[in-house]
Length: 205
Image 1 (cartoon, rainbow, N blue to C red):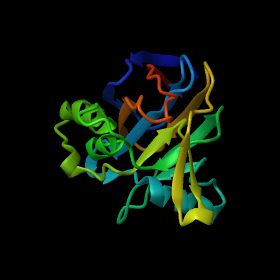
Image 2 (cartoon, helix red, strand yellow; image 1 turned 120 degrees about the vertical axis):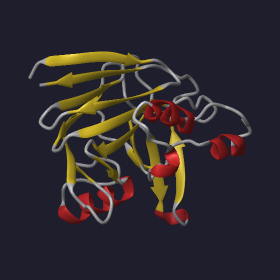
Image 3 (spheres, one colour; image 1 turned 60 degrees about the vertical axis):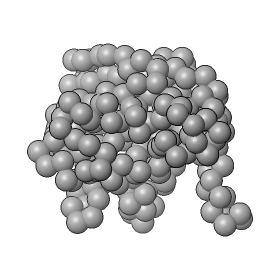
Image 4 (cartoon, helix red, strand yellow; image 1 turned 90 degrees about the vertical axis):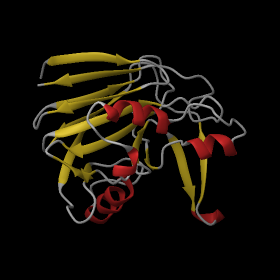
């Protein structure tokens, strides 16, 4: 496949764009150690949205992956359609779950700090979407090093990302999708190693 589009998402910002069926989205760590929050929508019906936890469960039930390394990404109930397939993954550890929000940053003792909520709000505005219209807590947190500890009543622990410079994950679109990407702006917790960086996007066809 050849690169047909390439652009940088600057640190602490977000961007939304369309990915046609059959094309491949490559999300790259130019410097390493940066989380990219990903939302996906059916490009022809925004009510059909990717649901991370649901996809994690389906991946586990069907033997296609886990909540930390999905092989297939599905839309939420009642649609339950295959949206994307992971075709290459150089890191192998991600997290299906919430993105950072205004309330989360306040709880981290950083009230008013920019969050992925702000990034997604800015990115989706161009397409006439507001976060109140989407199942926004459920995203694919590419490169996030998070773990649900079954010995501590499901406590989620976070560490710095394990992705290195040049690492990436690829998704093949199984339908026309609207993609929203947040270069996570959290430099308060360890999720980005306390230093926010840009994300590189490539579209291959």
